[in-house]
Amino acid sequence: MTIAAILRHKGTAVASVQPHQTVADITGQLASRRIGALPVVADGKLVGILSERDIVQALATHGAAALDLPASALMTTKLSTATRGTTVGEAMRMMTDGRFRHLPVLENGALIGIVSIGDVVKARITQQESEVDSLKAYVAGSA
Image 1 (cartoon, rainbow, N blue to C red):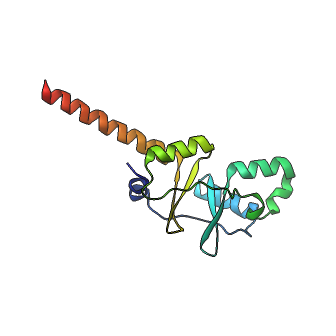
Image 2 (image 1 turned 90 degrees about the vertical axis):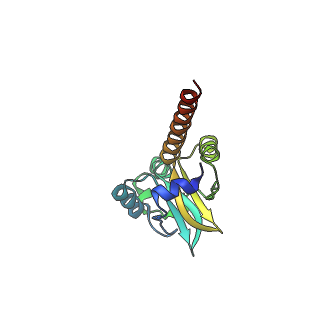
Image 3 (image 1 turned 180 degrees about the vertical axis):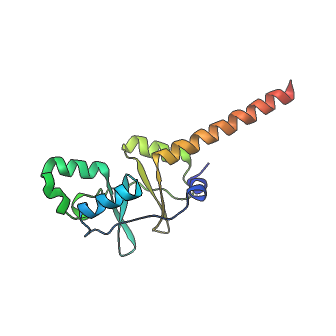
């Protein structure tokens, strides 16, 4: 199973923010959308990602002043990304090894989606259930 299958089910609509937007504005978006991270896009290009973890670390360091900082000051810029062809197993390994929960999906350099660890785990469970069902049917048919 690939990331393309997840995006077919989930959709490709991606909320994003711009580098100049403040943390206060972004936290409102995270809360209202009930999501844990937002890609940061400038001139149509993915330049970073801002997560709840980034914001909590900024609050611990800067206190309430962190809310006035722009996304560009806190965002993670060293990003791992996927393509539609990335397998669920590859995505899971990237996310586990990199210790992050949101994986941007790019096509020809453009952001076309984002998958969370929850999306990847759900897809893997569905894949394994399908494999178990197939094996059960095979064993029952050959008995």
